[in-house]
Image 1 (cartoon, rainbow, N blue to C red):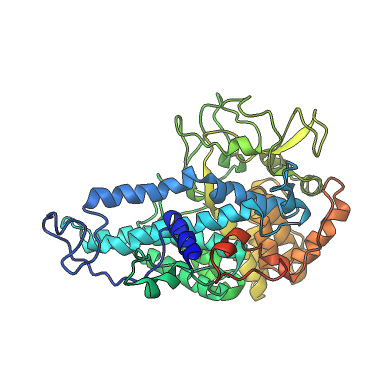
Image 2 (image 1 turned 90 degrees about the vertical axis):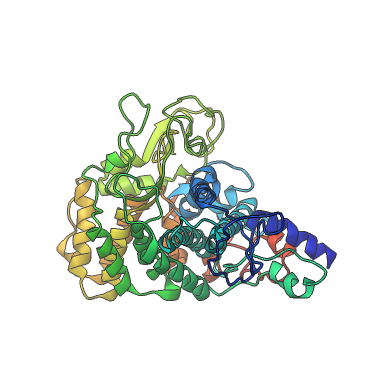
Length: 505
């Protein structure tokens, strides 16, 4: 038992989670040596005033910039290298399994992601739970609800990525008290949460998003870094497309609401990623297509660009080692077959290198959507949501023409012809065209794997790609129904005896 208590305390340091509290807002008028940190009823006071709350909330926002590994880097490894868009890029033992389908519970990437998502959930829980008892009478009930709503949207974002990767996960909305001799029997089990079902996880995400929709700030066209009502609408559309709580009617509803909020496609696809002429900053930020992004400016650069290619703002910086997420021959061929030169040029770039893991060193392709330390990490983009509406219309079968019109809007922006009448009128052909369009539009944005999972295409697509893509490392295990979820990290199972490994691992 001492072993598990030690493990629990170690886990809790990072993730700040568990324990049910019923908190009513009861601010203190003053503090003393006796009352410091407690309300009159004994409730812990974590935030003494508005400034402390806002500093803590700013720290939550900062996570999307500081912890790029799980918010961005690993999602591209899973979303693109574990699918057919790219190779792992480096032959490292922790990265290559995403390409050749040999991921195990011992993999350090999945271990990192599991822990980091729970830490993010813990950060959100701390604000959600303790902001009610803040001792600052200048804060109104509306202020409190707005702070909570933003924290709930952050929690929903973290849980959404986590449940899509792992399936059954602990759904944690509480914080555990310290273990003492008096409460050990009551509190000890709370340090080792069981997994909820996927449906239960999505229901909690749905609840957080609906709360956020009610109380979060309105969209600000000049600042797309905020957890706003539009973020809630975008995420609601995304969760209702997922199998456990699928409701395509609501997908359409919330995408239409985003359109009513003023979101639209940029006229020029290249504006989403382009730098200015001197490579000292982005050409545009807060585009009308961006719904949520993390922004980086001089002095606070985006280091993730080192992992994928060159930093155009500092050309030779960290360009001495093989990069992650190398574009696959199959993806390049798909762009070429489609005649899609605009998106190909904005998605893939060629440099000379000192390594030749997948291509000749004198003509080596790199993913190009993150091309400098100043590029924003766009978490939610309107084109993704608009295409999800097309998926909903196709799957409902009631408006194939409307779905085709959406796909055509995406295509004509990059100077491609509209879909043929034969494709527009055939549900299966239109679904195939839709999946290809998402692949070409959203390559290197961490979407492809999750598209294949959502539409039950993993086995048919991934078991075939190794034979037609000569550059891909040899497949270790075939993709099966158990491949749709990644393994629960074995170190986390060792720490928590209530966690159950996913089937197939």
